[in-house]
Length: 248
Image (cartoon, rainbow, N blue to C red; front, side, top):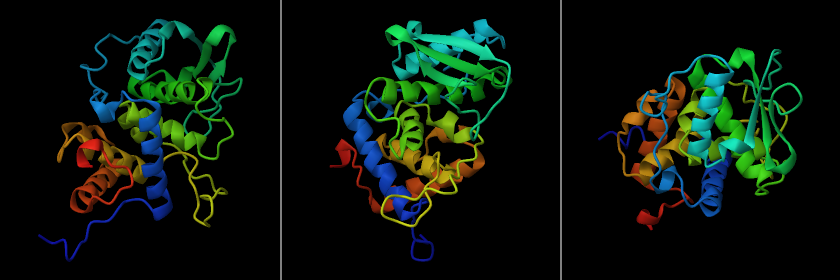
């Protein structure tokens, strides 16, 4: 009714908007089976994580196996070590000897998890989804680890597999403070911002023909606002380079 007064607008700046659309299309070519093609949207609910979670190695192992199932990673290939110290890059993501994921022999991955991160469990889901997304991208040879957008693409891969809510809800220092989008003077964040998550998830709702998806209620307030803005923009304008097949 008031589109003339408040025209629909993308929540992202033009460079971030173009990146989200381009990389969603790229992921669609890499992984045919995704939340965009009917996989469930994984949520912080008992329906998605029904097992009792003790905050110890047994509980972490069980939770990691559940996330492996959602990310199509064989659980037996993931070894777990709980470490005592906390060295964070943004919100707990660092792939060195402190915490993160490192490649082992015979295709196995060692997932180091800071003890401070194992409770509450739904925050841990986001961290594990991020690390397993890097397994799908880097360890499986889809991207070079030195690619300019590898951290951003890791976040978006979690969205692609249906776990974007967990990443969007993590509190991270996403500002890189020095990098720019290629060919621009626009600052490029290190990790996806709430606006980028909101816009990517808006594509998911658009693709699934969900004008008011119940799963969006699980988003943190800032990402939820960006999601609603992004979905309104897509529903009203359809202006995206990533076109779900049903939209032509």
